[in-house]
Length: 96
Image (cartoon, rainbow, N blue to C red; front, side):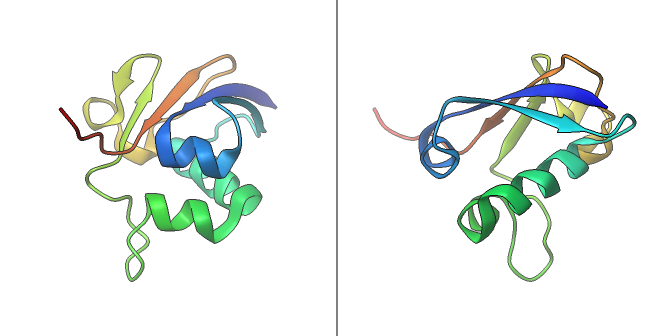
């Protein structure tokens, strides 16, 4: 097993209930596995913030970072996670 620390903000933080959570996953897990585990824990409220309803693809406006690097520049949601990784999930931010 590995343990990763997930950092959340805004609407995602409201659903999860706190800014940081530790999540245990089997060794070899990916970002997709992490997100699936999170949806199992926090349900449809979280799923509706992260995934398109019909295709269950991650919304393009959701940014996921692993150890400060956007998954778009790694292996996407197939990015494999290691013990101790820090994951940041960023919903869109607007304002002025």
